[in-house]
Length: 150
Length: 448
Image (cartoon, rainbow over the protein chains, first blue to last red):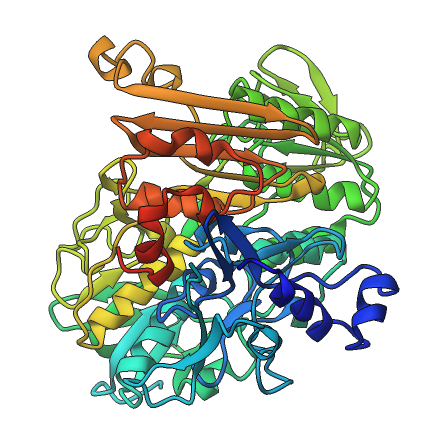
């Protein structure tokens, strides 16, 4: 339904305070949402990293900021990022955001690695967002996939 | 590894930059155990070459430039032979010989070989070019050398207004140096940008104190009055004289082909490879700046010496070397950069073939009539250009708003007929939602 709550909770999850009021009213620069609601009426969908099997962002990255973690899943290390945007030029989904306010950094979904369940999934009022695990893979790799909401 | 002529590595990679890392990561996904050896004439763990400018500017240390973790080779079970130069390939015996015969009296054998030797800076022979304080800017070694000499330097002459020239200029400006860029063609970043885009960059450069001279080149270098052996300036083709304390030659890179010269490996402008990244010699692969791989914009094999293509080519080479048959989908010349805080992406063609200096007058009217160009400027310096041939994207430029650039890259790679929705592709903050609804499910799944 395009309510945008996934964006709100993504910002909170990636804030320092983890508090919705502080994250929006006090923290500057405000954390960037890694999920974006796209609307093509009457359809809308939240789009974040698709966790490709052959991630072009990792191939593209000039510095190694986009890399495979020990489970073989693409991960972004903001410390190594120079915000050149090469990953954005390669990502077929437009799922990587530029963080201009924080200077030269990009941001992509990390499945809320520190939190357990992704905040967007936990707070989706319509359960349009859910976690889907690829069954043909051995790795305990969760993939947040979106479901289209008519 | 020295000694014992029977030593053989299942996989041998010459080079240890992006292409090598791509291959190592791919090989280890298929074959966790096969003996894998990397030989490099550089003495460092794989580092990010594009970061050498940050190193020069002092914004990154050596440790912060590592492309992978410092234990990468160990973790991947790679035997690194660094600071070692291979000087001969024996393709029939499947072995390589080292230049340093004292350290490595015996050759090293291999089953599969990857040539990831990269490129060498192109330095045209110039009178006075042997003076001190004239450098190139490709490797960490270059950056380290320049850093040690930069202290008492005020004016720097950068020869070449391409990516490397602009990138080193940014670092030099950060260091408070006075920079002049001399570009042979009519505009800076001409490989990446059209006239309008390049003009935006020229203005940005000038606003940051860089002097930009186009349509001119260095005829000869002259020495300092106090010390003729040290560069003190240059006389340009136009007759103008520029003073400098240092010169950096950033004209371009050429494939480093010395190893394959006189061998059975087929070479065009670079080493020719098929879609498996295999050369004309079975079991020998090539990738990166040294290879001529498939380009989906030009529909032919081409050099495209950019970092991501080296990694990608290496990845496909690695898969095929390890026995997992895959086909490289190709790439094209494409770059994204934010030098002097001006975000730009460009991919494929940046101008019509008829506007290309090398091809002007050679393009038929019939060919020209197949093209359509969309251009848009908007607030906050937004500039976008889309070049379409027979409905297929052949190139694009985005300035200041690069959101969703990869969506255009993907449409270009898949040769999708974009005519029905081409105007939507000019939208600000481009996203998948700008594509026709019926295309979305497949695009979102990534299977198309």
